[in-house]
Amino acid sequence: MGAVKAIDKRINNYIGQLNEKQKKAVLTVVKTFADEKGVYDYWEDESFVAKLDKPTAEYESGKAKVYTLTELEAGARKAYKAKQKANK
Image 1: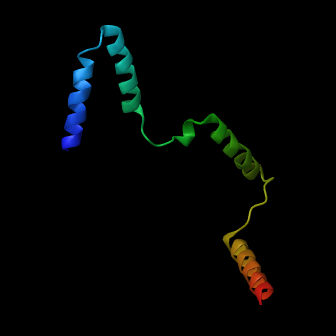
Image 2 (image 1 turned 90 degrees about the vertical axis):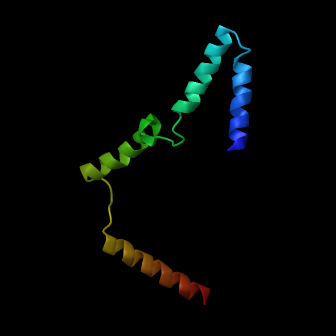
Image 3 (image 1 turned 45 degrees about the vertical axis):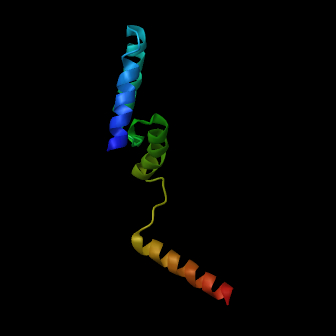
């Protein structure tokens, strides 16, 4: 906690030495940092959403090949057994 207070004091000291134009620039930077969530919002990324839209549209139209959980499990078991045989 002491280190944070030392940093605050140093920042306040420097801010007191700035002119109005410089203070506005610093304010812009500080606001940008404060507005950052630290978490990437995929739903705001148009490229990401577009990549999801294609397979979703194929699924909804019936063009995409989909598997049931039973089919996936059977395929995984078959692949596992084949790998076990190959390693013997």
